[in-house]
Amino acid sequence: MAKDPLVSAGKSYIKYTIISSVVGAVGVPALILILLVFIMALFSDPTNSMEHPEALPYYYDAGLQYNIDWAELLVYNETIPKSKPTQANIIDQAKYLSLTKAQKGFDDEQLYTYLFRSKYKADDLISTASSFKEEFSKVIFNHRFPIHINESYNIQDTYGMVIKGLWDKPHNGTDISASKDTNLWAVSAGTVVKMGSGGEGGTAITIQDATDPSKYYYYAHLDHYAPGIYVGMPVQLNTIIGNVGMTGHATGDHVHFMVFLGDEDTNPMWYLKVWEAFDQYYRSKNGQEWKDRDYPPPPPTPKPQSQGPTPTPIPICLGQCPQPSPQPSNDICIGTLCIHQPPIK
Image 1: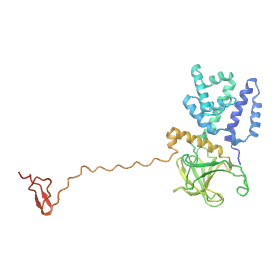
Image 2: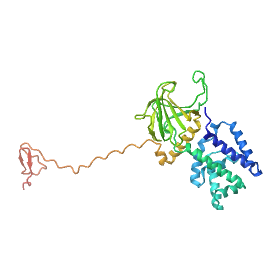
Image 3: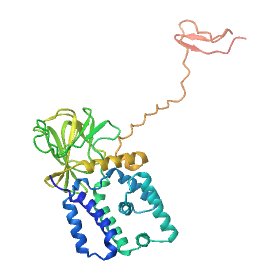
Image 4: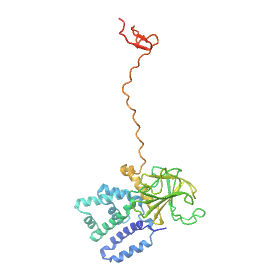
């Protein structure tokens, strides 16, 4: 089981900022700070960094609304003691930063220098946020949850668990329960690199991430593949790759989902929570990002073609023309054709 350096970076970045905000002003050498970060990283679970991944859309949205860099907002909020990453708190912080910036006419460096009373701390926050955004944007954006969030499902945080008779070795993925035949989607743009049936995983498929080719996503226990899926096929966020089942070693309908860093697996739960949260956010906005993830709209019902006015039927007679009214007429019946004549006067 690999420790994801990307996820580890998040906690390290934020811890570095917190340490810096406390001791930066007294001139602690940078080497000591680096050592402190390194020691803290060693004794922390890297898969638990960003303890509230579901809050990331709040930072992103508040940054857009109040013209504040969302990563700087996140790091700034982490420096505030006992500040919880609720949507209300994040919006309040974004409003405060935006208002202070506008009233003072500050750029970002001036804003945080003013708030921290230290240019050193301000530069550190901006650098930390920039590094965080550069690394985490690779997996935060342009990804999705493997099941459409309008479907019914249940995530089971089972990574690393050992259950006698079920998993005699640490479980290497996260199980997502759903009804049989629930559609499974590509979690990122990428390429199908492996397909196969048999063994514990049953019918399974692996996708390589196009944004970060070192990452692979593995789905197991599929009931069947979607029509037309093949190895080497490029996929997008709106590609359905297969359907939930219980092939292989499974006790119920679910997908066993794994994230690989190269050849080693890592805990998928952080990624799944982030993707689920952003899918919910995009759904609430109903913009292009949601259209990229949603089922395609049904084709429009074709309109009936206009055939012009209905022609007046020609009366058919058999020896006598039908009278259109009580008024007598002298219509002539020739065979089956009525020849209309002016009414008799």
